[in-house]
Length: 216
Image 1 (cartoon, rainbow, N blue to C red):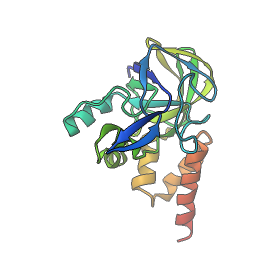
Image 2: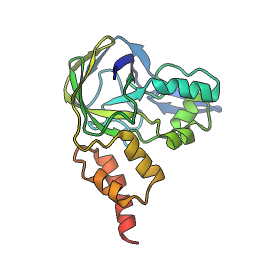
Image 3: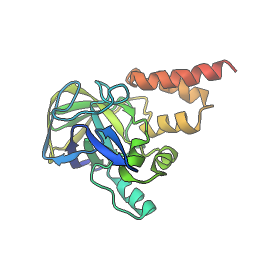
């Protein structure tokens, strides 16, 4: 599959307005020609709420370019570039194609898929589409995060190379749909929990589901 960078984006938190009320968010990104990627952050890029965003497990936010057509056809309106606050907008790397633990080289940087993105209501405010969060949950078009294994620079013309496919083959989409839509699937939950490469945040979520099922 042809894996390609469409946009690189970064930005610091700004004050935005939705329905007359101010809110702070790092979702508004600007397109750039390069990203300087450190072990725990991207230079000149940040999030507003460090309790729920950012950190070493969520250094690079990725969103599949193919979904933009879906959203724009569904809502009959254009979305801004990097509308989902992503740093990398890519083609050929949808949530169904990418598995937790997969390792890629992008430019000088070596990264590993750590988790899918847990969707939040900021996307509704930023796009002024009140139902987009629910639709993201329904379809699993969340995007995902990379942790950084080797730091360096990513340029807009950098190639994307799959270095190692994780043997478990559990996609970002599969984890999302298990958590949101198939909470009773004990065997799948246990497979997901066996992934050492899954971020702590998602380990906690899946462990909670597991405990609830085991109490029945």
